[in-house]
Length: 504
Image (cartoon, rainbow, N blue to C red):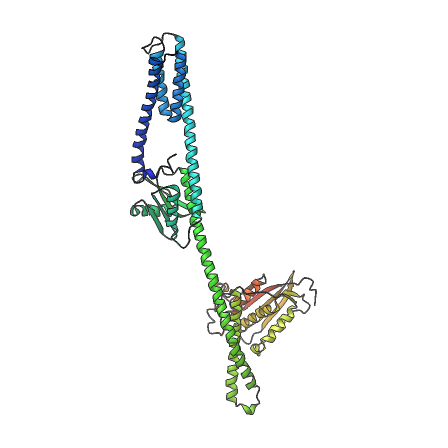
């Protein structure tokens, strides 16, 4: 595998099987011929030009075999060993000129030389092979490391498959490659036929199986992340080792996941900025509404305070309608401001110690004009401990819950407000005796602008419970709901007991 990353450029445009094997066979033939020439040259020099004894000849042959094993391989060194044994026997062991041996001791010397040369050539070839494998592994690791760094520079705004393929081609020198991303159905093919590859890429990704095409010498490998197939990668056989291909697929999976995470972060940031802009505009518009509403309210209040002779009954009725509408519009604007501040991240708590009964009493006073003749039963002991809350916001929660109970319960049935101590918290409950809330709707009643399916005719915007829930979440709590159709609804929330607040 020493050629896995280094010789890909030389093989560009050639079938990896048909192009590589002939060159390899031709190179082996040349190396065998060179090995035989070295043995023949040593034999000629020592036999004709520089006569030496048999021991020196055997030593020089052994050195030549080791040199051939170092520069070549096991095949060349083995053939050179056999050739050296034959030449040693024919030219230097008596009787010279024949392959027979007269002295039995020479049999032992010749056998020892043959074993030594073969063993040495084997060891040398094995060491060389391991060195080449180590170099190939190092090249693969370096290429994969470069690829991992390149994948960190992908731009989530550009097609991710095209970027990953380009990085692989540049870092691993692999001209023939195809990548398929399952979620976006995006494919990028380089140096291969897209028409023939598309079915294999989709099949490998959908079935999460490896596909080998013998005709085109391609391997299509599924890309998995968390056990789920997210795409597939097609490469030519032999370009990557199995370990390198596995690592490459993992890097591609991480690259795809990182790109998707970047897209999600970008979308979240855009949504956050859009939400902040919307909330800022809504807050500004709502405050602009407050000024004329205050003026309208002041005028209607002054007119309604005039003595009876100044206004007839019809005029007073019209002004009362305007006054009530101004109150209603003022409440809607207040809700819009609160919701804008919550969504815009401008929500801050001003914590203080308050008695639960005082919070309920003040909320009821604020709703005096809305409650009218409705019966409100308050069961909040005055000896409950103080709680640490934002008093203004908690009163807003209570008013929204009471307003919700008034809307969804008959006028003849009372609204019950209760509170009791549970451990280190005071639990507040507001109950009505209305139609109740179906189980499938209970998860949606806290959504903004949601109205019950059977209560579309009621006045209001559907923001009250959404605002109340966000206020309680800011306090680290939530709002509980218990309801059965026909049996009313009970909303509850908890308030932490103030440290050192004692009893009141």
